[in-house]
Length: 114
View: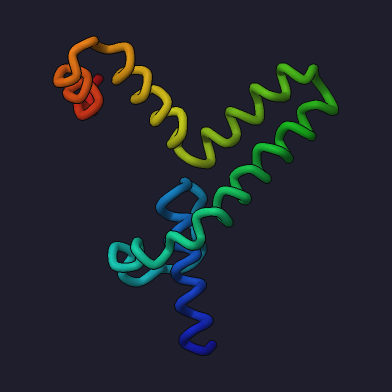
């Protein structure tokens, strides 16, 4: 395989590794150095995660109500991403509702134990 082809595969795999919990079937060399270069792949990973949610919703909607299907879809995307977006949403609410004082709100958002 040519070097440019291998480079884009490694960059795409780095984006998958960084944004999801989906296992990549091959070793990616120097993941930390590739983080800057893999950002163009973030939308593609977003499409992949969205497709997981959409497929889960579609399959669940065949058996249950739309609300139950939506819960399954959110659960599937949370499993695929390690609840990456849900954690960000929780941090937002912590910061906005944690304290009216700016310094305290920033301290709450920075503390990973809260």
